[in-house]
Length: 310
Ligand SMILES: Nc1ncnc2c1ncn2[C@@H]1O[C@H](COP(=O)(O)OP(=O)(O)OP(=O)(O)O)[C@@H](O)[C@H]1O
Image (cartoon, rainbow, N blue to C red; front, side, top):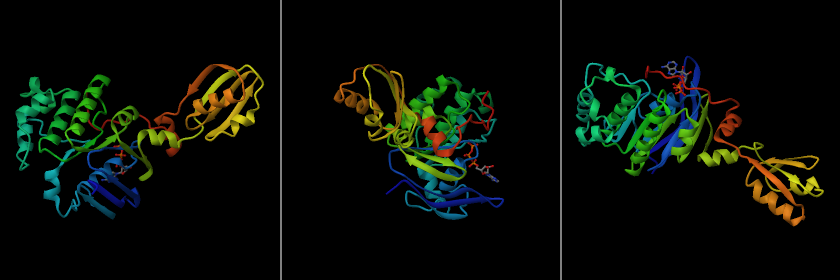
């Protein structure tokens, strides 16, 4: 059974479907990414999935439960770190973690969690005194304190510098190693590429692709390429006929082949077979950025932090 099942989910605001017939399933133990630019519908999708927003159409199940009708049971199994976290500014790190711990029947020891998340030095600091990275660590602590089987992390690393971001990634990998299923809303290609087992690309409320990061890259065409110098006459049709090859350009001894798949192996094998010596091989490979651009028609763009993390 999938941990999260979303079937034909629709959410309409002011006559506009901001989530438009979205279907996806998150499997147990995976890190599932939702990738899309600002306003694509990522937060609305996850918030509807965990019962925080009422769907206008479709069906959502978490561990087989209806997250709105069986809210209390779902809440016990799910840890949530949302983008706009409004925490009590006047409470300290320890007080906040203890308060959240009290919401759950079974949970982690607050002291151990504070140590594990490197919050020991700020345990008595108030939320509004924390740096961006410490605030994000605290929000993870609050998501984890109830010992969830599913964690929903929304734009966890937006606004963090690259060191803090990498340390967050290690934490997320530890969570996965502990058997927690993770839904990760992200704006960062590198993050998705490193962490996610599968990714749904959302654009204008629709899932435009759902695959592994590598699978998404394989879906795009025309951006991978191999170029070389040929030292004997070469009939372009022998390369153009190879599977995955989309274009062959020959300019003097310079040859450029573009397409998808493992072009290097195919091209070198073909050159050997036709006894064409070649040198100066260069390759360009497609990236997840290329895939996103091709799938959605636009760049991912910069995230806009919704919380002041300075
Ligand atoms: N309560 C609401 N009332 C009206 N419109 C809303 C509401 N919540 C979200 N929207 C709109 O729905 C669209 C999708 O928003 P959502 O927050 O799900 O996008 P997102 O992909 O998470 O974007 P971001 O990366 O900026 O967080 C946006 O155009 C947003 O303005």
